[in-house]
Amino acid sequence: MILGVGTDLANIERITGTLERFGDRFRNRVFTEIEQAKAERRKDVAGTYAKRWAAKEACSKALGTGLRMGISWKDMAVENLETGQPVMQVTGWAAERLAEMTPPGHVATIHVSLTDDHPWAQAFVVIEATPKERDQR
Image (tube, rainbow, N blue to C red; front, top):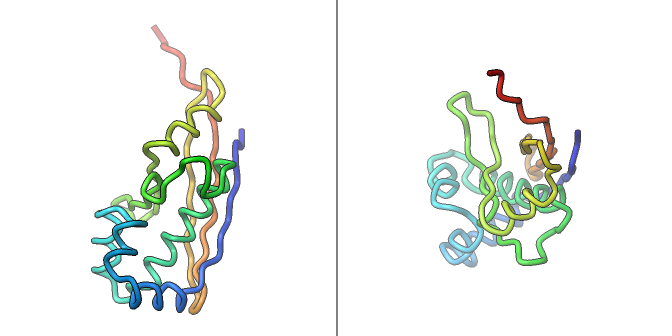
């Protein structure tokens, strides 16, 4: 079952300006070390940050909170599988909110899709709950 859906559109040029103006202060406030390392290795640094910004906004919407109620930017982090597929990791208050949303006997999965077409970066997040497998003894 679908527990939440969120989407966000970020302007890459706006993120470029924010990076130029605030630099590490912005990076360290919003992005985890893993996210920063990924972005700084990419040719399109600002586009990579913009997609992750959009993913955090989309995730907060799918959690039903937006960026309020105690949720922190770093409580949501985009990482990548070896295949390159983005995945959303949640900690802190975001993980607590996800646990509250998840029905008993179910496991929640956060699906995330990222795209960009300069000057726009977009993210789409779907939170799905599936029944836990029962012990087959």
